[in-house]
Figure (cartoon, one colour):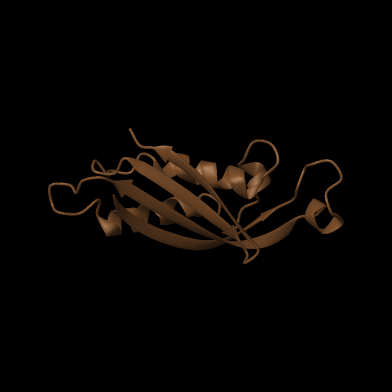
Length: 123
């Protein structure tokens, strides 16, 4: 299986909406997020690569720009968790022109404390 991974850092804010969150998490606060997208596929495309790296870099930057310097609560349904952010970034990246890629994993690291991922099939 071939893999291509690209990443993008951005800062966004949120506040947790779960019952009884820790006081500092209930208030609006910022995190530096690192989004990583790994495209996978069993074969290479006609030009000998899984997908164009520049296209992948542009796609992840565009996806991150939707949330950069924004409040996640304004963009994500429910509690604005890193898991929901990973899924939203996956959805934004799933339409990238990558005919040889069959699977995508989007991982989101919140500061240096934790990492979550969402994996799904492409087309």
